[in-house]
Length: 159
Length: 287
Image (cartoon, rainbow over the protein chains, first blue to last red):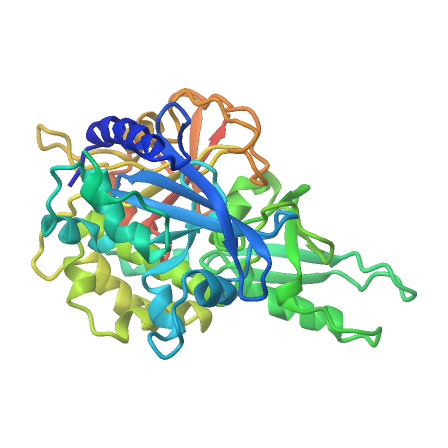
């Protein structure tokens, strides 16, 4: 569990640490959320842009990962392409409906448009099992960031 | 829960007109008129409108995954209950028709097309979130795998009896415990919905009213904070300047097409006036 105040403090430190590690995170909207963008390559070789946000979820009182992928003209990439090419979840591993129970579109609380989010309903249980001495958000992202193949710093070297 | 109130809420409908500007040699098809339950979603109602347009013989049929919808010149959220969209469109005074244009053109940049599967997934996430607020997920965790889909089915089949069976489980916990927080979303013009942790009672034990709860949400919601929307944050949402919300005396609280008295106990609203997603949806209007 993280209070909104704690989140605001943590997210500042988090963004600084990421930038020290040459990862392009930025604070947005007076520190309400952090944003990162990068390119992803689809299986047909096309590049699409990924937009990743970390927001505070007041219901579950945990951080939540919001993300979406866009073509050059701004069209969002369809769900099945995202699952297959970017999240790289194979059909044999998981059915479509079970993925949708973990990851689905939801209205972005600040932008007011649909983004994907990793459902935060189990986050606080997961976080109970984790050591957080390097910072709550760093530990949290080490679990949730890899679910969307987010580029992460070398955690063993992080101060 | 009150059976009569819940049934009335379930049975309320809104008049909707779908129009299609297709161009083409035959001109535009006739508009499609229908009455839609307030609890349903445009993503579910769209196929019927399209099959009416497709009935005439003028080339390729229009497919639901290729179209998007517009109300008053802005893209409309096909995953928000139709009753909420109607209440936001400012039509209540004369029971006017909600006019929806079906667009086959390229949607605005970053606009996400919505299909019924997506709406179902979002609905499930919303019901779970509501239960987390109410009971820390006690009820949904103890439900059988097929119970939540049953709630969704009651919407797609317009089946009140099935809905009533399910919603009582979600709204009247067997252990009789009070809700921890109340699922409430508040809509201010041209802004994303607002939500915050709102308890049922004041610290002194007296019941919180819906008017007080709305004031609290408007104050506490992260999207309310004196924010300066950047060009990016208003991407495709059509959001413009942060319109100041009317103060509590001038404020009208609209849900299901009626003015909800501000002194209504929040718990009554939650149990009886929630949409099937288990949230109370209040649209703010000014006098």
